[in-house]
Length: 258
Image (cartoon, rainbow, N blue to C red; front, side, top):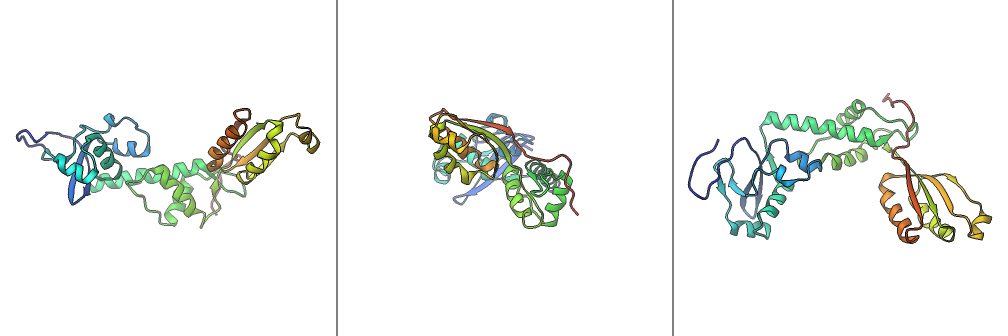
């Protein structure tokens, strides 16, 4: 699909084109097929594995390269890699109708798989199968967005599904040990971040003596893990410990939708 022309043109074949319109101009980049979505989902980190060339085009198929003045006006930089990265992140992937449909179906199943891996029925603590999540997503008429990562969309799906079925993110089970001197103070700060306390290995008398460390096993929402980890590290100056006992608190067997 390439045409040979003089010096301001580059010949490329078998490419996936990502297009963006900005500042009244059209910009395109040439990528390897099947790599764009891998990069957007975070599976691919190496930009050289995604871009066929660190060049911004006006028209990839004709090999017409964008002018540096236009790049500077639209992206605030003449750095080609930076401009390519912006187009890759926010541009529209140009595909045929059949390719687009196949891509959306693949993303739909990936989103359902992520939701099934992360969530349970809060009453039974049993996970849902991917097939049941897919059915529930169809029931709420969830529409996949090709330019957003599947992980982002999975988190959106969870919120939407909570309006129609019993579902929540599975809790993480943690065990932390706090220095006795910091125990009572830190317990109060940690309380809002904890869903359920399963075991506390100390008594009020021991806590007052400030001799024995405070040990606690609890369940938390996964979204709170980073805050808890940072709180314990900073407040205890590295003397406290935090251990993940399980990433998902689930019961055996799959959940069924009635």
